[in-house]
Length: 140
Image 1 (spheres, rainbow, N blue to C red):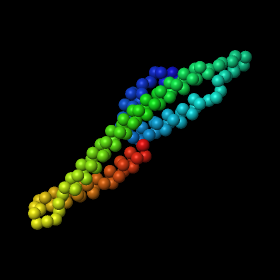
Image 2: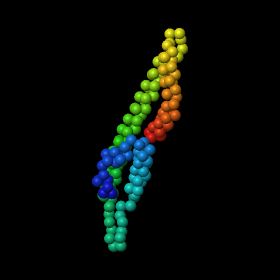
Image 3: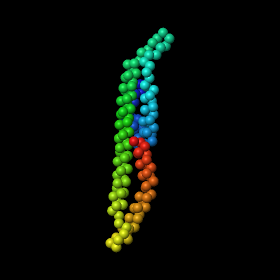
């Protein structure tokens, strides 16, 4: 348990970086590890020696809770950044698509070609955007 005091959440966060899958796995693993600390036993006996560790266990639980909360805060920041990036990309594409005019006598051929080209680019990006959206949704 000394690792709780020795490790910095910032170091763990930088090791995981921006990989949402690794973050998700780390958060799940940290939550699962917390259950091992939830032991109701506060005394262990080794033959005639009895060790009472309720105070230590309480301190370890508090430190772990603090560490886990800080870890979740880092994850929330990474997730928020990714959500904002995705929103900006999709919103920008939506605005540009809405401004494209493909019909009418006043529309130049070059504008129609540019519009169709951009529409094809967006169509190619759609599967990637859907995958990222699903990943972001699952990470929440």
